[in-house]
Length: 256
Image 1 (tube, rainbow, N blue to C red):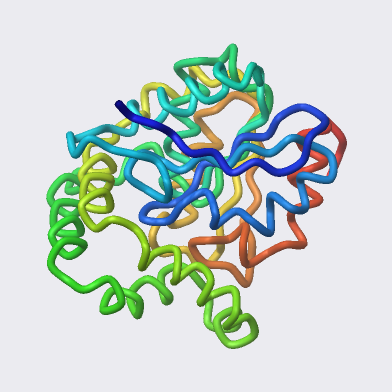
Image 2: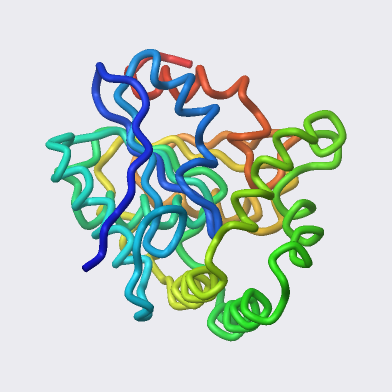
């Protein structure tokens, strides 16, 4: 039986659900959760096979991860919740908001996409093979450069290594399965189903999900607002804590 682990921070206010990037866990959100936990109950979910969530080894999809997030919101009696998704978590949050609008109040999609392009299945299959074939630490050079801009890596080595430790601890088989799930993602026709007020964020230097992908999200979701963040790459919300108040203001329905 699948058991989903949730990192909980804060005890009051409307719940915020945090969905993490590929091959990491809900723990990656710790500094963000501490900030948002001053106003909200924060639920940071470990995706199946990641962190402390169990997994039966079967293939899964982004739609399955969205259903997991929906189950967590329902199990905690937390809906409708505000939701933040980063990278893989952003794609998951998008599908969640489109399929279960009753569970999502306001939405933040960071460094995410609805579709990785016509060659995505083959490209993500190669990523899956690399996840299985290389030692976890041998993959870190690629990941560090992808996740963080040069200046952040130089100024915050502690935070970079914290994220690296989470990556190293991730099950390679779950990492590979999640790669294959992203390779089959195509939620472009679901953008119009999103009813939640949406803020789209993307690092200006993000080459994993380039700003053009976020522009497509913002264009397809009614009323969505886009911010391109300079000095940030793929994990923009970790690199730019100055935007956390903007996220909090979005959830409060206040002008940022």
